[in-house]
Image (cartoon, rainbow, N blue to C red; front, side, top):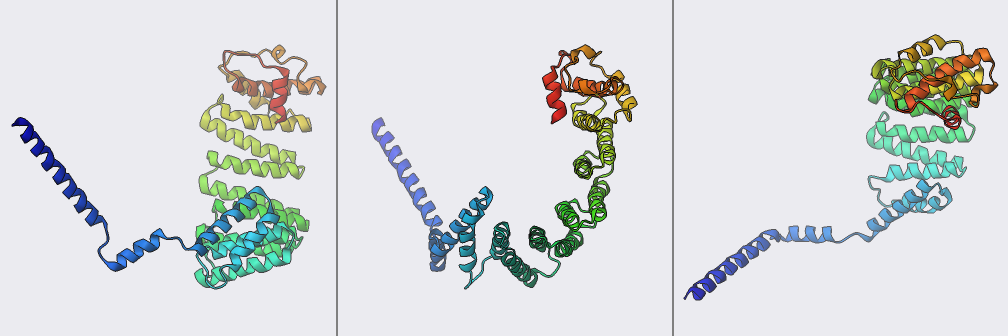
Length: 346
C-alpha cells in the first residue's frame, strides 16, 4: 500500500514538472510570425558582412604588426566593398587606408584618402566634430613625412582648434597634436615656435591639474627631454628639479618616487660636469635621511665618477648616495659599482 502511494506521488510530481517545462517552452517561442522571422535573421549571418568583418580584422592585424604592404590589399578591399552602401565604420576604413598609404610613401594617395574621410565626416557630423581630429592629425603627419611642413602646421592647427572647441582651451588630450606641430616647426627650422609649443604643452597640464600635482610630472619629463635634445641642459635640469620638488612635497623626502628625478639630475651633472648647483639641497636631504650613515667606501673608487676631479666628485657622491639610500632597504647598506653604474646609465 505504501509503495503504491509513493509511486502515485512520484508520478504526479513528474507530470507537474513536464507541464511546467512545456509551458516555459511555449512562452519562450515567439508566437508572432514577424518575431519568428526576426529571430531567424538574427541566427543567420550575412555572408557579405561576415567577409567585411574578417577582412577588417586581417587588415588591423597586419597594421598592428607593422606589415603595411600586406595591409594595403585588405584595406582597399574593405573600402571598395562599401561602394554600394556604407556602414558606420566607413570613415575609419578610409583613415586606416590613408595611414597605410602614407607609411608606404604614397603621399598623394594618402592625402586624397584623408580628405575624402574628412569630407565624409563633415557632411555627416559638421565641420567642428571631434571625430575630425584623427583624420586631420593623420593628414598632418602625412605632410610631415612628405616634407610639406607648412601644410602640416596648417592642418595640425585646424585639428588643434577643433580639439579646443570640443574639449576646452587647455585640454591635455591635444598633447599628441602639439608634439606633431613641434616636429613640423623643427622641419621648417623654426626652433622658437617649436619650443613655444612644447612649453604650451606643459602649461596646459599645469592649468588642468595644478603646478604641484603628480600628473604634471610626465609633462615636465617630456619638456626636459626636448630641452636635452636641443642642447639646453640647464632648462632640462630645471624641469627635473620641479619634478623632484613635487614628488618630495607629496611623498616625503625618502620615498622611492624621488629616485628617478634624482637619477636624472645626477645624469645631467655627469654629462655636463656642473655639479655645484643644487648640491646643498641634496646634502640637506641626505642628512635628514632615516636610513643611517652611508659610507663612501661602500661605493668605492670603482664608481663611474672616478674620472671626475676631486672637487666635483664630492657633490656627485652626495646625489648618488641619496638616490642609493632610497633605492635599497635599510637592512642593506651596500651597493656594487655595477649596480650604481646601471642606475646612472638608464
